[in-house]
Length: 152
Image 1 (cartoon, rainbow, N blue to C red):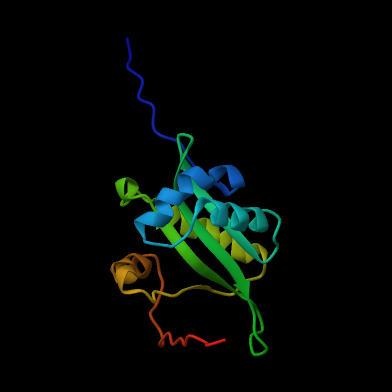
Image 2: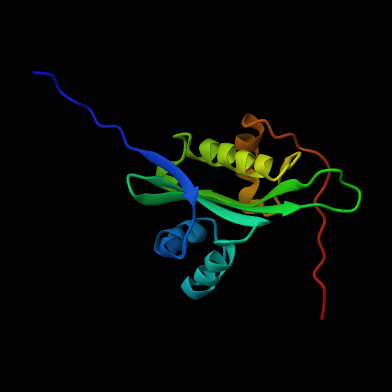
């Protein structure tokens, strides 16, 4: 009699509003300030958007990671770039290749839209620990990120 081992199934797919219940805890792990209603509105906006997207990593039916993407092109760029505006993998599932798979799908999403590069900004001190992860995935640190709060 042979024993059969079942491996967990990881699926990367476009997000939907139904994912909000799983995504709120992910957002809170990295201290992203949002509410259920705000996140649901943003996910609804992204569902059919051509220039922005949210992908989720689903492990055996449960969302354990997400990446938010945005196409960006300025007057001096011959091709657009894909901006990663957030990448989160559940604390209990880190180190299993889920973040790398999300980045692979982000790259494919950008390639379909003729993107020449993936960009990620690590502007928050709490995100500095993710820099080695991005470097292992082939990202190169270049330049500085500057910002200013505009008083309206």
